[in-house]
Image 1: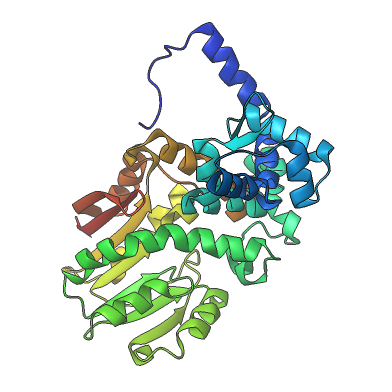
Image 2: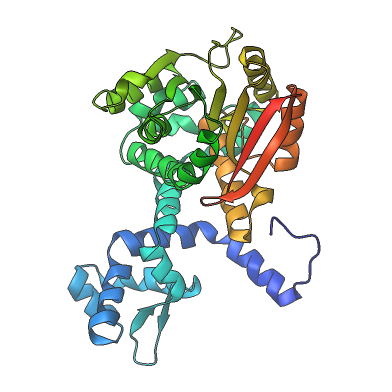
Length: 359
């Protein structure tokens, strides 16, 4: 479900949810600490070995954390339904707490929000007003665009950013690549190739395909470092390019691939980029776009995650991009002179694969 078209909540349900929103930052920061200080892991271990929970005193002894600190964190965890307490004062994990501790997607999302986005979100209003990523200043950069600085981000933001990006793209690469390679391409242009993970997978899967990565010089350097020792490295080439510069794209590929790339740009820039791809594409060529659309998700939580991540684009990426609704994105595709030849939703963790032909 993408959103609500009617409000059936009772007054009590509505005000309870409203209060949760008011204190959501406190709940989030408490959750991060309950996990990173080892409280959730200690509760899980106790449940596994003794079938019981732990008291505040037992946790304090086990983790060398003060009873006061544990008390305020656990009470917030109770309100957040992360832990529960029995009549003997022993705390246990709820199902939500278990997911926050063990689920890979929850781990990725929690770390991304904490390590990359949280401080920057203080600049959300300024970023919206200026259409510029003002939150990037928290990492020491003042040009309003994150992409040239990805390799320079301080830790843990750098590791967390790439882990987040790879987690979602990797899950979709295998099923999407099967469709791409079914086109029997001779050369693929991987636009926004990042660290080269898609290019690597292509040349490993298909012995006849060559891949050229088109990206910023800084990203090209990262990809070259990652791929130089690959046995198939001779079939991977590199073309430094700033896609926002008004220069023609190179020709020579029968398939153009863009994964989680166009969401990095504003609507007019997407149209301009695709028009230049259109000019470089042979008449029988195909453009393959792997994207995440909030209105194409099966679950409400997935749409929430994408809408929240759109605010990352606002405060950190460039101040004017987002995860678009598919209905809006398809209009941009048409403006650029393309038509949809195939669409596959629910690839990987919620991606959509679009295959475009010249209209």
